[in-house]
Picture 1 (cartoon, rainbow, N blue to C red):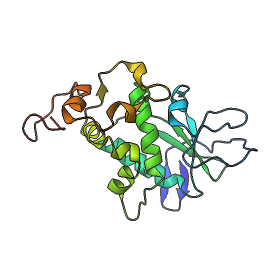
Picture 2 (cartoon, rainbow, N blue to C red; picture 1 turned 135 degrees about the vertical axis):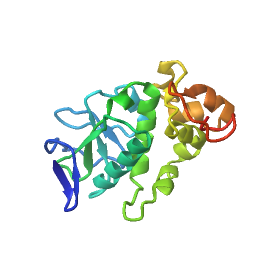
Picture 3 (tube, rainbow, N blue to C red; picture 1 turned 120 degrees about the vertical axis):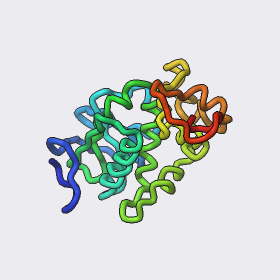
Length: 204
């Protein structure tokens, strides 16, 4: 167990080491595990090279735990059995993330995960401002009906998989300001759901 604070532990094996000699990356950037980190600030560019074994995510010093706790809440809402793993790094502005298999199953899920990570930057565990942090990302706020349906458990994307990859594509481009009927047709669940309200709602 790797200790983040005196009362918080994250299930990882060891500290992830990285080499960074260039200028500090912009907040919310992504980097592959290479001999020297080369940061990518554009989520859509990064989606083209999204790795299966993990990546680095940049944040303000001491902010890594907030991001971890935010993602843990997301994965608890989704009832994931296999959870993402995290590690501190030797850089005080970078977190190592090994996404759960769930996120790697679909390009649209990968795109949404990068949005959740950036929303986690605004999460304050003591206040538990989950909703505020979630909607702090404009790309989430502009597609919140799709995000809510996804969190209700309708996580299977029906569009062509490669639609989510590259510039001008991804979660926001696909779901921004789309009506509920479109969202419901594109995000489905193979599990039988107990209806909480009438047909036509985001959770049915």
